[in-house]
Length: 502
Ligand code: BES
Ligand code: ZN
Ligand code: ZN
Image: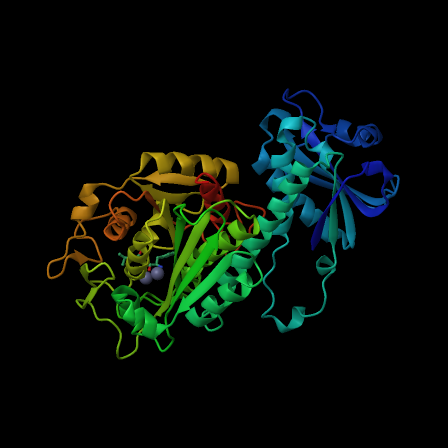
C-alpha cells in the first residue's frame, strides 16, 4: 500500500472508492452527520433510519453508488465531535483501510477535511492518518508459499485529500508515514521466527536498514569483541547457544558533538527457552518475540535519523539466544557484568536483566542526557497490566513528566510503576553482589527493574519500559496492530521522548 497527500478539492477527483466520515451528535436524540455536505444530503434516509450513526469505527459501504467521480462510497464513524482526538483518528482510518481493502480497488480517496474543520488539530490528525493507514496495512505473510502472488493491497494507493497543503501539513504527513513504516519494519523483525532472526541476522538487519540514512552509523560487536569488552552478562547467557551473540550500537548525530546523547537500550533475546530453568512448552513459541525491545530500539533510531531530529542519539541492543547446551549457565553460576558487579544466576530464565546489565553499563559510560530501555522482561508485567499499558519504572521526576507527555503525543498507553529501595534490597546476592531473582514475594517486574538500576550510573535519568504485555498480540485492543504479531510498542513514544531532549 502507498499513501499520498493530495492538495485538492475532493469533488474534483475521479477514483474507484471514496472514504468520507460521519460524526455522532453529542445529544443522544440528534442524528449523525456525514461530514461531506453533499453526501450528507444524499444519505439523509440512511442517516434517518440509523444505519449511519457516527459511532467510532462504524463502517458503512455503498457499493456501486456512482456518486460524482466515485464508484463506491465508504462512510466511517469518528464518534462524538467533542471526543475526537488523534488516537480516535488513528483508529478510524484503520477501519477505513479494512473497508477499502474489502473493495479490492487499486485507488481510494480519503476525505481528510471531513475529519476536522478546526484548524488547530489539522497537523496532528494528518500525522495520525498517515500512521494509522501505514500501520494497519502491515501483513506478515512472507513465509507462506501460497501468498507469494501479488495482492490487491500491494498495489493500493490511498490519497489523503485535503485543502490544507502548507509546508507544516506536509511535514506532519511525512512524519506519520516515516513512523508507520518504522513500526512495520520493527514488527517484521519481531514476527520472524527464531531460526530466521538470530542475533547475527538482527544485527545485520539493523545495519542494512541504516544504510543510506544520513548521520546514522551502526557498529556491531561479535562474540570476541563482547568478551574483550567484559560483557559477562551477555556472554553468560549466550554460552548455552550455538549462535554467536551480538552487541549492536546505532549512533545518530543530529546536534553539536558537545551535546550529550539520548540513549535507548533494548533486549534483543532472539529466542528464550528459559535455559536450564526451562520454560513449560505451552506458548513457548511466543518467546521469538523476546527481542521486541531490541527491534523497537532499532526502529526508534531509524525514525529519529529519518526525521532528522536535532539530537544526538544512541541505540544499544544486546542480542543473544537463551538456550540449553552443555556449556549453558547453570543455576548458582556467578558472572561479572561490565561495570564490575557480580551476580548469581539463580534462575536462568531471568536472563533479560543480565544482558541489559552490560548494555546499561555501557550506556552509562557514554554520559547520556538520559537512558530509556525497552524489554519483554517479566511475565509479572503481563499479569499486572495485560496488553493495555506498558509499565515503566523511573525514579526521576523530570523524566517521568517527559514520558507522560510523550505518551499523550504518541497515543500509546503507559503506566508508572513503583521502584523503591525495598525492591533493591530483595535483589541482594548471597555469594555475589546480586541475585538475578528476588528473595521476596511478588512485585516481579519492580524487582527486575531494581536489578537493572544497579547498572545505571548515579544521577543519569533512566526509565525502564517492560513491554512483556504490549510487545505483541495487542490487536484485540488496537485496530492498527496485528491480532497475534509484534506491535512496535514504544517506538512512537521514544521518538517523542527524544524530541523532549532537543
Ligand atoms: N522473556 C521472559 C519474560 C516474558 C514472559 C515476557 C512471558 C513475555 C511473556 C523473561 O526472560 C522471563 O522469563 N522472566 C521470568 C523471570 C523470573 C524467572 C524471575 C518470568 O517473568 O517468569
Ligand atoms: Zn527468560
Ligand atoms: Zn526473556
